[in-house]
Image (tube, rainbow, N blue to C red):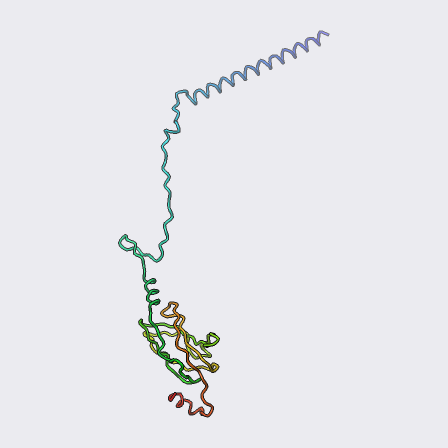
Length: 209
């Protein structure tokens, strides 16, 4: 019985000592951190107000404007209006077909001159033969007209009439000096060489007609 009481007393003393040690350790731990906080952040540490912070200005970078067809010279912007001038010249160009003439008879296989009268120098021109009734373009192989024609100064283009169907036709431009321009000739007739003309006499027949 005495042994049991001794054991109980020993356990009480042991538990009490443990609780006292825990209380002491926690108390010292809190005191240490309290001192550390006071030393790290003194009460007289200057506080910066939001209004005292220097505001850094925000500079908005604007994307440069895209300047179409403009060049820089002597720090000045000079607009290149050469293309506009060319377009205006083409709008006002006075281009006419002087031949074939209206209602002329052109024979298949014979050579003729496509003559132009223009207020400007023609260095390149696209031509096509069109059926007057259907308004269908005849290709360069069947019509005999070269579509793309270039020279220093185009005034006359030699044309050997191709093997198209006899009928009424006209010639039209689609491009002049690299710019779109539509000009039409007068309507003319394309007919067959008379059957009584021998092949050996066709060249002479063409010269006379």
